[in-house]
Length: 258
Image (cartoon, rainbow, N blue to C red; front, top):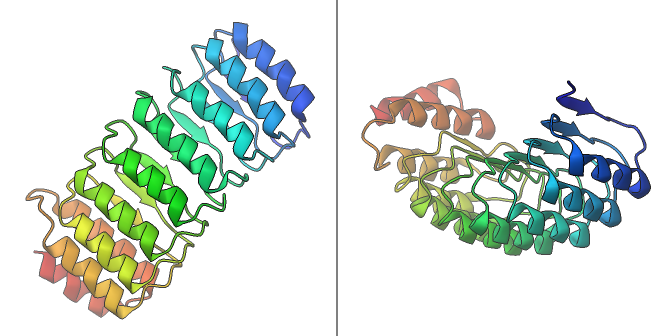
């Protein structure tokens, strides 16, 4: 029985997506559907969302590198409010923007199964990430949020920092290739002081300098968890590699954590 269907680069259009959606309504074996790099737009996303409403087996859906905008995002997000099966949604490199991020924020308030959400390169700015961060404060299911290659700055980092103060589930937060500077790093450091769950905070290729790096190191040093030394070491390693900090300076920071 087929459990994984990879339709990578098949030039699937909205019409073909409708055919797939019809199959999803009745399929009881497929668990992974990969539609990476096709031509699916808002109409196709609507069809797939309708198919998912009736499907009880799909746990991983990848729509990376398609043409899905705000309207298609709304259909998918509304479906996921009630879907009790899907755990991983990959929607990277589409066109969802801040409004699309807001739709997914509403999803995170209601969904009880989604553990990984990938929204890389979707033109999400501070407003959009603010909606996501607000939803994360109460979400206890999502463990991985990937929002690299967007337009998130210091204000967005502040929103996320506030979420980290309250969230107890998120273990991976990927913020690579954004516009976060030293001020944003300070906000994130403040959030880290109150967070005991995060195991990886990816900050490579932002605008964080030595001052921001020190804020982050201080935040780890004063982290409220008493038994997450491994997490602290790993997080600090990420900071060092991301910011170009020398091995000796990184080692000095590690010693401060002990």
